[in-house]
Image (cartoon, rainbow, N blue to C red; front, side):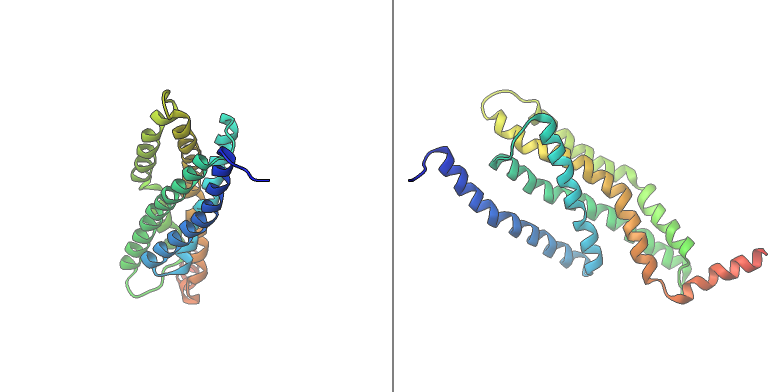
Length: 204
């Protein structure tokens, strides 16, 4: 028994997506690694992808949309946008950490200085990060509420992107700085804790 029509088209599209989605994720990982040259930073940015997936699925459920080829295309586009916001956050964190190291000179950073630098990179520069996210979402909202020929397909592309941007933004502003602080804290040399002890003894 053979199948034809929309079902056959849908099955062919699913087969293509089974190849395209892993290739897209692999390409994003490769580009991130070529940019940062470090595996830890690359994995930190890749954390934004599952969080973006959560937001996209939630908004799909809220809007009553089922999984389709158009929705899958929206998730593919979301992966690139979510990685972009994670890269922006990580660049600011690295910049703030490098500035703290420059002020420290030859000595190692203390944990307090490390946390202060991460706070500067994560909090003091929220505006450019939010401007990027808001600009992307503002461009997608007219598509979401559009009516007319082809609007149903475009809505199914926009919905996972909008929902995913909300959840990935929360990850970018909260989780990524926390994970970054943990990883950089592990990399501190043992001598980096000496200034903290010295300050504590001086205070006594």
